[in-house]
Length: 107
Figure 1 (cartoon, rainbow, N blue to C red):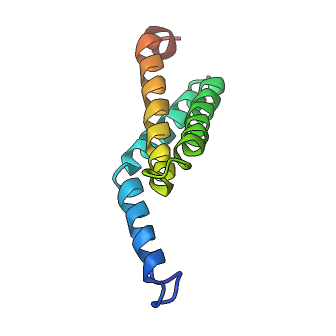
Figure 2 (figure 1 turned 90 degrees about the vertical axis):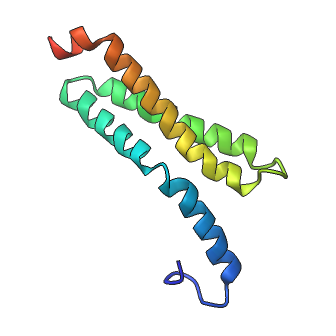
């Protein structure tokens, strides 16, 4: 973190570390989401990839907008909105895959 800010700005470094702890713990969620994007594009269903993107991004924007003004949550709510959006999109993509697996895998 100190590569990007001066050493005297410890408050910024502390906030950045808090952000990285939240986001870094859930990076496997974005990895799974990228795998789903590629999978749905590879099998000829790019619309599902777009749906997952809209779910992920829409959830993140909506939650960040709703959680940021709450004084007890503040900026941390924006950071938590990101993995929540990833998780929701992952869940929808996997549930769709399980529900349509015969059509998807054997078509």
